Structure formats: C-alpha cells, structure tokens
Length: 223
Ligand SMILES: *Cc1c(COP(=O)(O)O)cnc(C)c1O
Image (cartoon, rainbow, N blue to C red):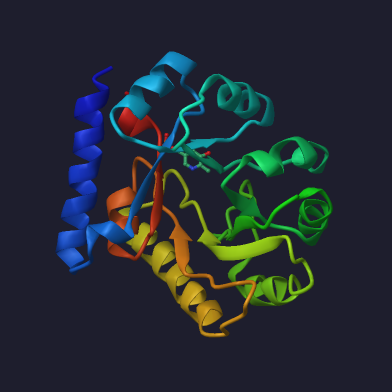
C-alpha cells in the first residue's frame, strides 16, 4: 500500500472535479473510510494529515477509537446503527451519516449527551438492498424531528448503486442536491441541512461535481 500516493491521487481527483465545475475545493471534506484497516494503517493515514475517519461497525469503531488518541481526529459513523448499539456509539462520534427512521431518532434523543450532527440517509435510486428514506419521505421525516433537540440535521447522505453508470450517478447525486436545497430553504433551526455526504471510491469525482461536501472514500485510499 502506498498510502501517501493514494491520498495525493484522491485529493487531486477532488481538486480536478472542483475545477471542472468551478467549486472551491475547501468546500469538500475527504473522509477516509478505515473500516477494513487495522490500527497501524489507520495511524499511518492520520500521520499524513488525514484526520476525518469513518467506521461502520460499533465494536470495531469503539476499539479503534480507544487505540487512536490523536486529539484532532474527527470520527464519522457511516453504517447502519442498531438501536441497541446507540448508547455505546452515539456519544463517541462527531458525525452520524445513517439516520433513517424515527425509532432510531428516538433512541438517539434518549441516549445522546450532546447534540449529534446527523445526516439523513436517502435511498435515491430505490435499490431494495439499501437503507434510507425515499426522496419523497425525506422532508416530512425531517419536519417530524423538530422536538428531538439532541439531533441536528447537517445534511443528506446517499449511496449510488455499485453497478450504476456515470449518467445514473450524476442523476442520483443531482436529485439529492435538489432535496438538500429544498430542506435548507426551510431554514429550520435544527436542520440547517447545508451538507451532502455522497461519493465513494468509484464515484466520488462525480459526486463532487454534483455538490458533495463530504466524500467517503475507502478502497481508493487503501488499495
Ligand atoms: C464502505 C463504505 C464507503 C467506502 O467505500 P469504498 O468503495 O471502499 O470507497 C463509503 N460509504 C459507506 C456507507 C460505506 O459503507
């Protein structure tokens, strides 16, 4: 693994995608998905200055967080979170990317000791195997969170199907951006909804072109 080269390449691809559409690269945060990596490899990535990290399994995340004491790491939890794991995980994360039900929101409300920055997960493509709300459900779901004062909806998150074409990816990310703008315009105090978590190794340049503010990249960094 050539972590430094991989990181540089991913950063350059983000820069190039920003240039293509006239965005400032400073609007895009690269989140390194370390879910398949051990602690030393994760530490090596941190040593390169990559401080936003993401995990998707409660037990692995908690063990890794305990082993990694770097004070500036920002932890993203990107996986489906079982309700019984919320109490262990939710106070340890900086961003939670997979809010997709009222029951989960209720559990977060009950267990969180501080306001949690959450992305509402949207299944734009309607793929059956994926978690997330439909685009149509998203606004009402967010409106229904007004009394959950431990939840701040910072944005929307989606995943494009693994086998989708570039055209389909553009379409999916564009639709999420439209929904994000629609919610942002409501100017809800608890849902600024300024951010878009979209783009993985095989589609992050397209996601950046379509307005992603957080890209979640694993394989391309740790190949
Ligand atoms: C694993 C994972 C990623 C990273 O995927 P890669 O294809 O390895 O870049 C991004 N988002 C979520 C939700 C994931 O589970």
